Length: 283
Image (cartoon, rainbow, N blue to C red; front, side, top):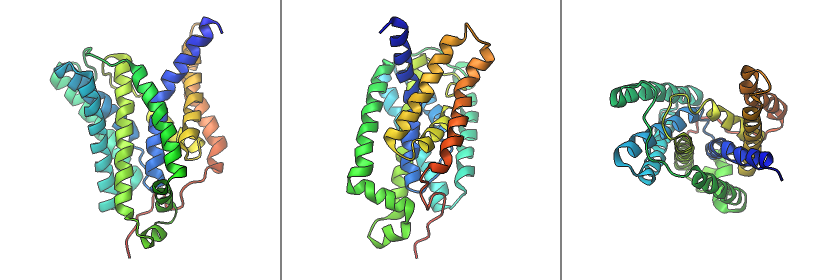
């Protein structure tokens, strides 16, 4: 195996990691019946919090923990809007994206005087998150399809009335997995920061939405989402190496174009949870 191939494979793993983590988080929340298109903003929030905490404490581990908490809080906010106040799931997610976007511009400008960017700060080796992410996804596959807790989750997303009758607290389950989605998106945001070494507005670059697409392509399965994320990561890594040979605009567009094409091919085959996006009212 030559150096080019090894470098391409390593880049594929690295670039696939945040997409796979977001796909996993969305798998959990949508299996519980909650749509969250706010994953883009939640990942951005995770990256911003890592930048702040790492800059002031000089502790990248503390910053990583803070990103998980911030992501969880964003997930909790979305859960409150959708479950307690029965807001439209998509509108709530878009609201989070807008809120975080404005917050990021305000905080970076107020703290560092540079709107949308931060100075460099101490980082972790991003491969720590890569390895942790792959382990989490493998464990999640077993959890979702081989344990009673995973079965309860799947029943909540398919037939919440039946789950309620069986003694499962539907709303508590939805809260838990929507918050877990936020935590995993916060971890993805931490990866973006540790990979670059500073915060830049737009650094997530649509990968939150690609994570949702990866979940659908992977048919709401952790390993399926990982496979779709690896495909995106491979094309993204390949386009970086093709920029010297093809127009830059086309090479940058290539991963997103592929995502749309593959999603169009797989979307009708996806087993969408029957109660997805539906407000459950206990009788």
